[in-house]
Amino acid sequence: ITQLLYRMGYVYKKPKLVPGKADAGKQRAFVQCYEALKANKAPEDPVYFMDATHPHHNPVAGYGWIKRGQDREIRTHTGRQRLNINGAINTVSLQAIVRYDDTINAQSTIQLFQQIEAHHPTAAYIHIICDNARYYRSQLIRDYLNDSKIKLVFLPPYAPNLNLIERYWKFFKKKILYGRYYETFSLFKSACQAFFTATDHYEAELRTLLTDNFHIIGST
Image (cartoon, rainbow, N blue to C red):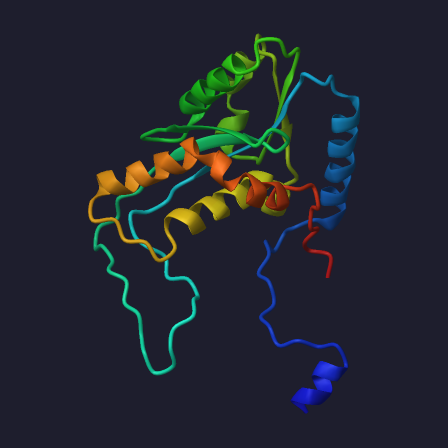
């Protein structure tokens, strides 16, 4: 029966877990708006995708080739220390702007905005695509944006698949956490910082990864 299913074009794999309230129609509408934004913006006006990530000081066990009958051990920690990294990435230039904060909130987001603005002194507008986190819609953020060149573009609810920085964070964790043990939290943080200062090393991989081929979820 297995060979028959293969011949019929089936493969054996798990279904993908997606948010229960994902709206395919709203996602398609966003993609249309995004394409219009890219077509109509000024050449010097950048587009960023923004979100936070919280890597823990513990390795992630990934798949790899191990000789049959043998196991490979990776040491782990018992603590729960983590980094709070707030960031945004320009998928055209591959420029990532990140900062480390004790808490990700409206205040730390404004500080990230200021870093982004400093990189684009000649831009009339800076378009930043983000999810619907409560602090992005806070009064503090709205007040700041009144006098800022930054324009927030909100993703549809339950659509992490449309936020390209999610792919970047996944790539970052794969390079830093998969199969890697860091004896101290300081070494772990240094490895994370080194990744963001050496992104030229990953340019070819990131060019392939951070494309606009959005996958719509919740349509089946």
